Image 1 (cartoon, protein in one colour):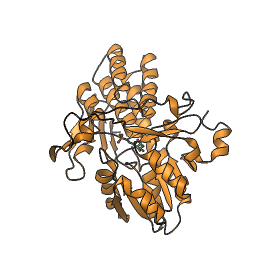
Image 2: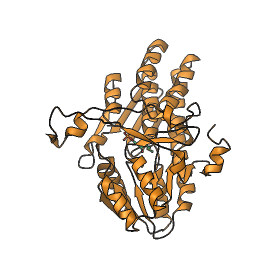
Image 3: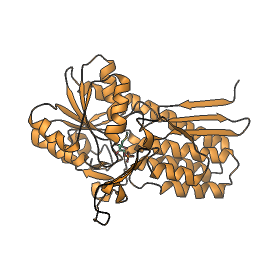
Image 4: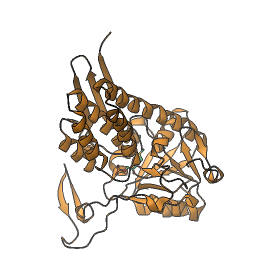
Length: 347
Ligand code: MRU
């Protein structure tokens, strides 16, 4: 029997040879999408951390799974338990908001604490990858029940195959509805400042052949007023016990606008995104990012600054949407409403 294991998703590839102690981990560099599809091989901790922090690999579930696989690769290459603990600690703090990163690394760390073999660490990371694929599939199955033929749907950021090991969360639901034959039209918020909607969601939806229109974030309210948006689906980086949740900056505005226009607003996430130790959204740590992302833009396309160099900038990567603005929470285990949250489904 072959000792080679291959993992393959839209933005992550791994090839693991347990007999030869070889581990190849590759990520699709999402900062270069949609115009360039460049795969990067992750070989060192600084490179892995840089890739997470600069959003070459991004999306709450995917950064968790990627960090776990990286750690497994380090174990297979012979790193000592002390060194693995150090690597875990560094990765744990790479980004603060997505609890999936901490959850995946905690699962790995408990194996290291138990002096587990490299093989066990590899198995644990592979399981985390495969679990995420399954969780996405189940979320999609539940969530697609909420979509009707002819729906016009707003989404924010990117929550698809580029953000998970599987088909995605909110976007996975839309893909599922599409494959079930429902005719839907998706409005994509461009998602300032790093444009995950414009660059990534637009790319994914076009790949699937789903009708879509890209809008600036500020256009959504006007479309709602015109009756052109029927539902909104978003993802999450951390859900608190009371149902408040963090997601890409701008999500709260979408929720407020939906509430005003009486439009259902759904959040989709795997249970690995629920933080049962977090009482409410007030306790979710919010990542602050550099001013240059708002003063201008920098990437494979060049470097431009449109604001005065010295202007003060406030650039939180995420915001918190209070539970009261959320119509339902879609997890792999089902669709939850306010009464379920009150009964402690996230406690
Ligand atoms: O900063 P990013 O691009 O990692 O932010 C991603 C999001 O906010 C997603 O909506 C969230 O991680 C859920 S992805 C299934």
